[in-house]
Image (tube, rainbow, N blue to C red; front, side, top):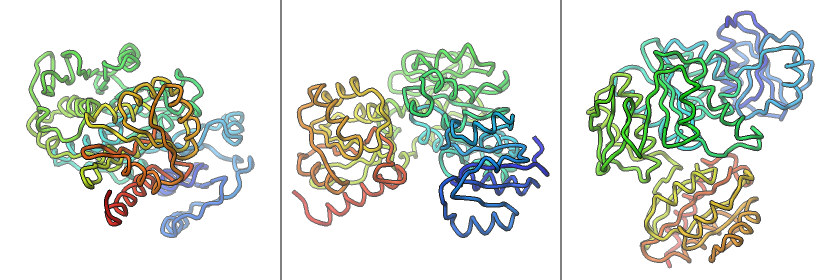
Length: 456
């Protein structure tokens, strides 16, 4: 789409809305940035938006904002069910995501990652492997900076790496990445998408415009993802930990292999992998499959993976105090993430969970909690429902905490030498915190205070 002289309403004054507004103004569009909440933009952002000619309206959201508007760009956190979007649909005004703007302005090819869990680890590792090509590589989307702003600055010779949530994919139109990865699909964000079918459909939009020369990595160990094969026109790269594949990557006998036309090449063995758990093998296989297909050598991929120690807030080892090791897994915002975290440890685990409840089913989850934990400490808005579900499942040692500091202190008192204290909330952070990063940082601060205050 040509954006010059178009009237564009950008909804949501967070990072993606600010980025999209600035980029569209550079392209000659007449931009209004709106948020129904009163928002105080960071001064530097406000100054550059005003300098670019963007009109900023926050604190209300009237239908009159739609008058004369050609396109609405919606930020990922905003539901399509809000009144102004419904009114825009009635007026036949196009509603697109910031990801679509990024695609329109990017000169470089885009490689994109989605899935319920593992996106950030995979995106970070993919970025580092692609940097080994010596080409310009930047990352944005659900991780890092506004994707459209990053895209605007990218040269044609590089790679733009995008971590994409279902919210961001829901409103794409022509978005077509050169490479796409779908890691796994488990129930999440059902409050927004209403049904599992709609959630899956949103994820599938990552490849709906791909053609046979584009690459699509599918985790065929996940039945929902494996089923996507029949709806994709892309060149499919399969990944599996259960069987060899013809194109893509697989894991067997302690080694990850890259495969092209049935010929496997050993890339890396588990002794050189420093991020725990089979879910991280899945993430590594996805990166191997795509980068090998893009022409990278097994040796260069191995070099990067063997030096990768994970990302902050994702099974991040914080420290060991008197034989008790603390792990920050604040990014585990759904039950499936916590299942994967619990399965990563052989040692006894004291689990800290709870937060802003996503209202997903807890029966199977609590069965695993019963098997895999020594004690659980529930906190936040979800604590009551989680405790009831844990009791129903027969979980024996259940505690409650009224703050992160209280949870860390109780966990430490319950732990013995060699035990693991794991913050893995299975919930969003919005009851006590503004984001999962803030929650993880608070956990790490409380652990630090514990160390400074003395031990058992």
